Image (tube, rainbow, N blue to C red; front, side):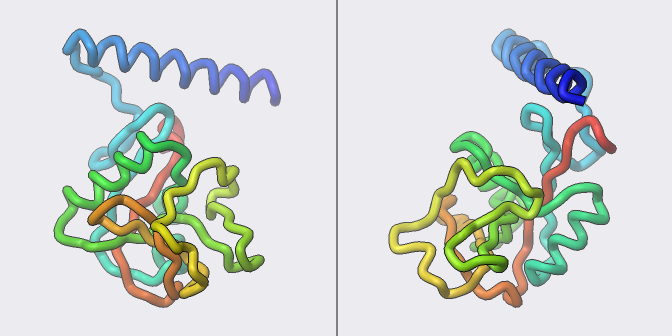
Length: 161
């Protein structure tokens, strides 16, 4: 199992490096490992869904699509998610998969990945809610009530579709 995971990470890393090399030479990448309509970054696929839903409903739709609400682990990933939301219409905010619903001030991603990056606005999180949205004006995050209806972004692994 560890060998398989290590091999997958190595493959993803090499793929990401080669994608960067091909892009730098302006050679199109022919193999997109994501379903039609999804955007790939490294080993993950992303899709913006414009239909407003509560946090729980949005997570359920992402689960049905084979993933989760998006987890964000870098400035680059944050920028990609922000651009997907902006390109999808005129939304001023959208759900991401971060919540502290289980334990106050102990945030976790719905996909179970580590919280190794955050981009909260100044003064946030301020306990206005336990679910987190991205604000499209600046790509920063805010905690809000989970029953708010918002568009959302899903993520899933690139090789599982």
